[in-house]
Figure (spheres, rainbow, N blue to C red):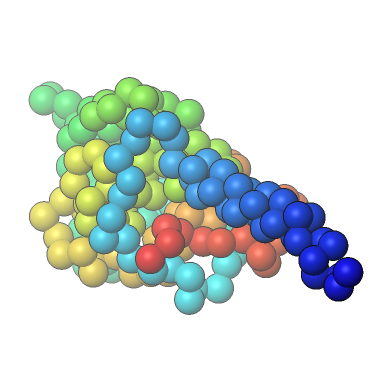
Length: 183
């Protein structure tokens, strides 16, 4: 009996196991019941940053001036008399505590930032996708190409590194990580 005929069953089981693992991985990227995002910007060409992302400089700095012309997330997401847009204050000193492991105002089943899970984090979905599954792409009122893939990748990498309030250390990441949403 040829080798292939003897081992077809085992090969079939192996292929089914691989297919099942890939499906599990794809499903784990999106929490149950969430609308998958679409129209997402490809960030796969941006080299990953595994360590050295400083929340205050990179992420908070992005909130304070995302285009180099003084336009800021904090133009809308700031505590004022009528409250911040989306009930989310992104000003320095309070933004991290308002984002990490905090349920989104638009859909409490989704967190703004889920440490180590950028695809499940509404912050990344909102800046990366035309249809983030909840609400609109940010920054609101700006064209979808306003934020650079490098800015999106920095937010992705910060979240993937555990979304620390300080600086990322890169201990748990490797170069085989897929980044962003599959196109």
